Image (cartoon, rainbow, N blue to C red; front, side, top):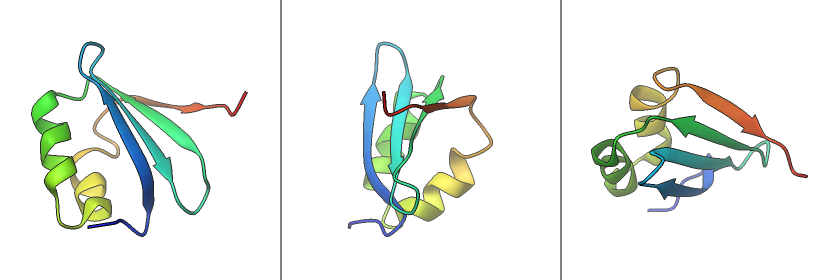
Length: 68
């Protein structure tokens, strides 16, 4: 199901980095140390924004990626 808050996500399994692009701001954040199982659950979640808020936001170190 498409998300109203998350535009796109990508996952690098070697680095365990989850990249998330948000609809409202258009900004990308990278979340470090995300296990593959968490990413798989995120991808299959019916409501991705809710899953993100409960299981990813504030649980993994993150950084804003500039547009440059």
